[in-house]
Length: 510
Image (cartoon, rainbow, N blue to C red; front, side, top):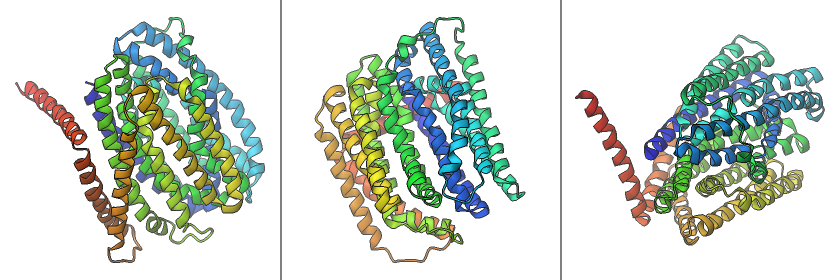
């Protein structure tokens, strides 16, 4: 059941990520082409500043999931209900605090923007963009955590997929009709408010939670230990844009957002693996199945390293040609930034490499033991970003992110090996060496290909297929040969799930 749910989560989340990538490229290009890089930059920046509210979560999401693994494993409805009630109460306070924060930000943010926007123009845009975030915290985020802990990410993914498609269609229609950006973002916010309402209805019907139970506040007492991890994740996602908004200019934010679209899309595909497996690992730890945990973690490593190396090596070889085609005809700012592209891709690749180690550490509930490293990463990232942005602009903030990612990835790998899995850390270093070698071979082969002018999406797509095929043909066989047993175990899991599916179909026919 765990393997089946993990695979279903991976497939559904992967489908969602692919749709998100496609829609994510359509909307910003439409906004840049219609309203300009300045408007795109200010929308990106507002979204990042509104995201500061997640600091009030104090890392409670990961803590609650860890607390839910055991009650879900033994189907203790009363314990589940009491944990959810305490969590829901907490997020209601966060939602109310968000209202106040949104008005404060709306009043201050127009003063930070180094661009020719009116005060009320920016003020109202902040409130409109913040509307959907309020709905998420007030109605849906608690139930989203429950579904994640119960290995039902596929429900969330399918719901997200639907609202993402509808949102994109509405934005395209409104822009084509020539309406202002405020009405465009209002239409988008109304679509996304539907998602938490549907999620709320689904969970209450499916789980039949006990509503008059006493909230289990002890279950979320580790939230302050989770704050460091939460802060580090927050800065990884938002520090760069915030630093650029304050110390550079809003058009640089637009440049950052375009490159980040590509990198974030690839990262989300890799993160899909984490969303599919983390809850299963939590279930194994709750049942003290350490042998099973180690075996499945090696499969997870094999998949994660292979996918990360293939996708990010391909991205490094393709991103500049894509951005050139994507921003063709836009001249209000220079979007061709090779050094920034390569540093950003390397930083995010290292972040994705650490996901298996982070996921199992959090599934084990080791928040307090690893919180200091998270605080150091967060401090290191923001201070170095502020220092380097003065001299190097977007490249500087990318370098700061890269340094922070290196530190934290190594720490997670060492901690997990020594304290949870009890194995040699050289297994991690070995995988790094193998996949760095695969990346270098791929880049060498790609450089031998004849140079062709890429001036359309179709030509870029053909080139992308060729590069990705080379990366896959190098990375997957190399990992399979060196980690043959892990590859064999992965194939056995897939076969077992396929046989189970075939048997069920036969039963239905009979």
